[in-house]
Image (cartoon, rainbow, N blue to C red; front, side, top):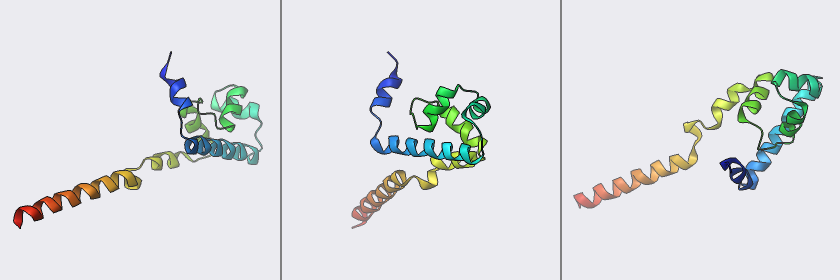
Length: 111
């Protein structure tokens, strides 16, 4: 058995909701461009059923397909921003805690 089904079944609800929203937004973008599902799926290089799954936010659809859909609507620069270290608050918080611990250790040594 592959790891993907277990990973998909344990996705956090907030992540699933974000994918659903992304799929819905991509569907809206397609409709606003007056593209049929058949044409859009051909442009993506996927079947119509896969496009339907993408537009429903199915987490089993390849990240590459989502990326290509974003490219079709000129939104690929947004992908680069998703995990930008400058916006990683969790890592920033860890860096701050580490700096505070080091500061406390130095202060104790000098007291």
